[in-house]
Amino acid sequence: MARGFFKLFSWAAPLLLSASWASSYEVPILDTDYSRQICSGMWSGQHTSINVSFDSTSQGQLAIVIYEWNDYKYLGKVTSETDEYLPKTYICTSDAVRGGFCSSSDLGRFILDLPTGLSIENTTFWSARVALPASSNSTTGFWDNPEGNPTPPPSDYSSPFRRDPLQTRQGSANPNPSPFGLFEYHEPIQYLVRKTGYYCIAVVPVTVMQAASSSSSQKRQSSGIHPSYRGSVLFQNVFDGELAATDYPKVNFYFVMLLMYAALAAGWGWLCYKHVTEILPIQYYLSCLVGFLIVEMVANLAYYRYLNAHKKSTASTVFLFVVAILDAGRNSLSFFMLLVVSLGLSVVRDNLGSTMRKAQFLSIAHFIFGVLYAVGIVELEFESTSALVLLLFVVPLAFTLSAFLMWILWSLNATIAQLGARKQHYKLRMFQRLRYILLAVVFVVSIFFVVSTLTFTGRLAEDYAAKSWRVRWWLLDGWLSLLYFFAFAGITYLWRPSANNSR
Image (tube, rainbow, N blue to C red; front, side, top):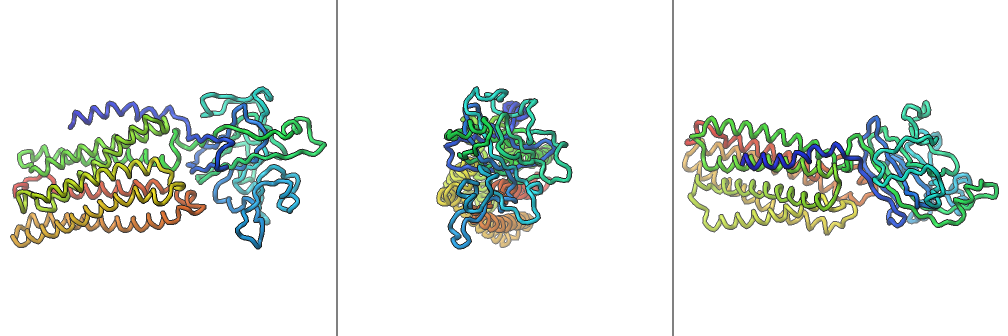
């Protein structure tokens, strides 16, 4: 086991270090996209930002707005006070001007409906009508980096939104002042993020005819060219890497979990060494499980570090299956061991007969459903996936999990009754304490099941992602891993090697 652990660690170590070369979470944008909006959580820092870039083949004009979700209510104006089914009017067009939703000076921009006394400088909005280059050689100094835009290059070009963070307007809560008039795109748009939140970028192609007095460059940009664009939105968080902000806490979480399991393994190993002549068969099984958990934590940490360094690819998908198999194997082995112990194997009865085969079948089923669930919560888009598909991943695992828990508790009660009848008080106390641990686990799982269900029922709400992006990883993955650790630590404490093992 030790040799296998060090072999895996030597393989995973380069992956754990490779994230230092990562850039940032990047999302492509195309004129053919069904959704015109891209949103992501952002962990803010002194140098965090959102960069929006377009390649040199992009042409036409775009209405672009960047904002933090709490200001979403100010975006667009109500189209009809009597017909609530009509969507808001979001873009200032000629019809919108005639309808009184905006002024002619705002043509081609997003409409902001700010209340009296609130100016755009006191919101998070950056809004502009952006003119893209009509061809690859229509502008000079266009930055065309084939490797993306991890770090915008220095430029002498003066832009109202590419500036030093300390040079923002005094007294303004918004470090991203919106440009006036038509803005001609020359280099990546940089939006400074100085507050942790859920930020969105909306890009809508527009065609706006200028008045006769417009400059020749503006006439050329709006002469009826059908807007077409291709680019990317780069979220530069406080951390370096390709992971979205909602998933990055898993990197630190699994590192902490690895340290906790390593401390548990060190304590368990010392007790095994101290009482090596008193070790029971069940403690050998627990020793193997402790080693397996260390390997699993290394694999989980290595996977998210790899994903943070290289984002999703064929290699990361293969890595995901390895991690999913380890996670599912951990859960199945743990429940199987709890079940056979609760059934009284080697304590109340010498063998379990056909019951052992039933326990093995349930363990295999739980293992398969655990692999599917682990892959599903990573690969599926939680907001866009139908409820039926999500339930297909959740319900089978919940069924086998419930079967395990109910069978374990029923068997444990029966074993405790037999030990009480035999007046084997030392063993009886161990199994009673094991029951208290399992009842506490069931209680905690029930609470989190209710919380997760309430959270899940609101997943189609407009603000669901904005409200849940910080804690989604915890609801789906984190709390269950932490609960398992404390339950397993309690069980290993009860069955720890000691001088009284033979008793």
